[in-house]
Amino acid sequence: MFLQKLIDNLRSFLPAEAVLYETEDLKPYECDGLSAYRQLPLVVVLPRTEEQIVNILKLCYATQTPVVARGAGTGLSGGALPHAKGVLLSLAKLNQIVAVDPLARTARVQPGVRNLAISEAVAPLGLYYAPDPSSQIACSIGGNVAENSGGVHCLKYGLTVHNILKLRVLTIAGECLEIGGESLDSAGYDLLALMTGSEGMLGIVTEITVKLIPKPEKAQLVMAAFDSVHKAGAAVANVIGAGIIPAGMEMMDKITIHAVEEFLHAGYDLDAEAILLCESDGSAEEVLDEIQRIHAIMQLSGATKISTSQNETERLRFWAGRKAAFPAAGRVSPDYYCMDGTIPRKHLADVLRGIEELSQAYGLRCMNVFHAGDGNLHPLILYDANQPGELERTEEFGGKILEMCIRAGGTITGEHGVGMEKINQMCTQFKTSELEMFHAVKAAFDPAGLLNPGKAVPTLHRCAELGAMHVHQGKEKFPELPRF
Image 1 (tube, one colour):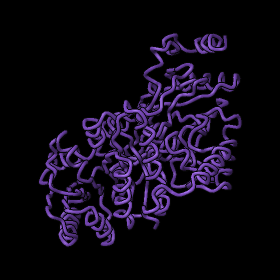
Image 2: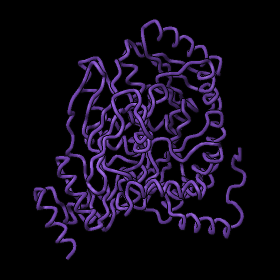
Image 3: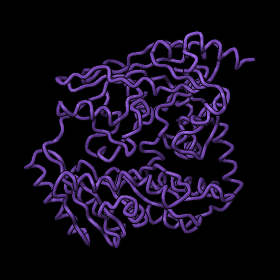
């Protein structure tokens, strides 16, 4: 009865085809890129205008119906997992670039615009949008804001939060907020940073003003192969220690190198235990000097083989291998579970050793690919969901990786968000008083808890139960892993 009334009310201001409720129509929305978690929503709505979203939110607020916002569905933490008794609000059809200001170097875009589409649209102006997640060909800018996404060039150019100026946001009650501004600073609290990475829990973003930067005159990449992960990790520290901030610095381990090379033939050294990609961009003179310095550092750090891109085609081919790591994992395993932790660079080798020990203990292979320059790890645990108990073992393995990141002085996420995947580790990362503050912030924006409920911030009761379980379990399973 409630469902039919909700459908009728939604269709009073939305076209019939924009309100989905049949099981076969709901199926494509039951999960995001992290397919380990699945849930059919009650209803899916596909608005095309901000006015329609306002009406949807007002209706859900009046009927106390949960709302989960969804972008392109490429998220990797279960952040867009639907609510069984709620509305799944797809923003995919709000996909227009509203305006571009080449003098101010900004663009106003709707949340459904693909990340890469921004750079493609402004390329004739000699500009581009810097954050470049591996999924940039498909992921939406609204989803990037929700998760504070990064990418291979975030070391030099920053995450999403560093590349946006202003947000247009709707509250659960349908009120419109303008957050941020086009000047360097604005009065009051920094709500722009608060909203970025809030995973759709505080409001619905309907427009984003992004920064654009000039395309560099030249970009060149050094690819160095190492006979140990420890040496590659040391090379990362040596480059940063020399005062060089590369445009991007990425690392892959042996299992990842083989998976990628078989998939894409990027020209990677199959004898290497680790490969480091280090890019310089800027003027031709700057790049020449920096590439020479990077090359020398790689040699001194023990690289067994060093290649430097000789043209743009070769540079893009080297990067294509890195950006294809996730689909390459899909070719060598029925399923994979992508983690996202961040650690201080000095602990890189120790944490990778710990991951290898966990891999052996759990009997599951793990591909390691990561943003080495800022210590953002992306271990890909390979498993088969059709094997009884293997998903549960994989989840436990992933949780141990995140806990190791915390012990190293890091955090459980660098750019994928918390969603459903890491909500238990939030209890380890934060104290009770800190979680209470998170809940207070949530309540200030969404008192009834209708926006993306049950995600990102665990209840104190959940943490108490997990704490009790940990005490009752007694001896730690892997006491020999790095304690830092």
